Length: 335
Image 1 (spheres, rainbow, N blue to C red):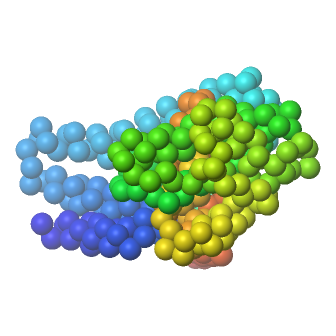
Image 2: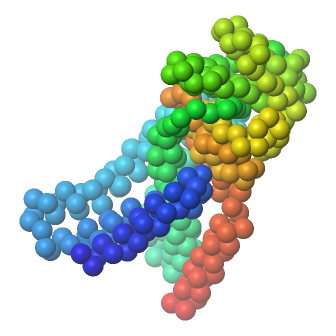
């Protein structure tokens, strides 16, 4: 049982951190460390279990990730083709395809360098592989914990339902992506009324872009009113131009209404965890719920969210990458 002690420590730290605030990125890292330490502990116990138990463990730890990586590469390239076909060739729509090509490119590079037999090239590519492994670890942590965070259900009544805006079609019409958020917010509103609670204030949040005829909040409010929501139950936040401003300006409105408010924030599911981190940073008293997104859109959007989170923590991440480069360089020179 001693082999599982480290996994238990990481799991306990995860539980304590999540209990304090479920919106921290460190929860995602602790989740990943728990999984890795548990996998190592299982491998250390293989000689103590029957073969029919040991073989599935080895398969899960080694074969599944290897085959899964290849399958993931194929899937991402296929998804990239779908994204280009349906959404156009904007750089953001190419992320899944680039990630898939990167997987196979890295595999090919490792094979070529191994055949070349160059000590310097081995060191350079080895260091690159370690950096890729670090970034991949963070991505899997982000992905796994974001999935868990998306299972959160807010209990009890809330005072406000904040719905984050996005671009409008034709400058004044709500697109399907945004309609999904509004529908989720309306569902929360109607569910609270159905159980006899007071009607929460629906708070569409979004300002007017340079290419838009009206503020996003105004278009969102009109959509909700057209769906039967009373106008007196809607308050507009129509100044924000970024997600950070969505949070800050919405918090100002909610605090002015009731300093002890409780809210939920609604966005699309791929954006929920990162939006939750922003809500925590802005001091918003509430969790973030995700609304459904088209399946083909989710991979590229999730990669984009991870890149943003990685860059938001760039001081730590770039510092660790720099340390890995220095260690790789030192190891190559001393070999």
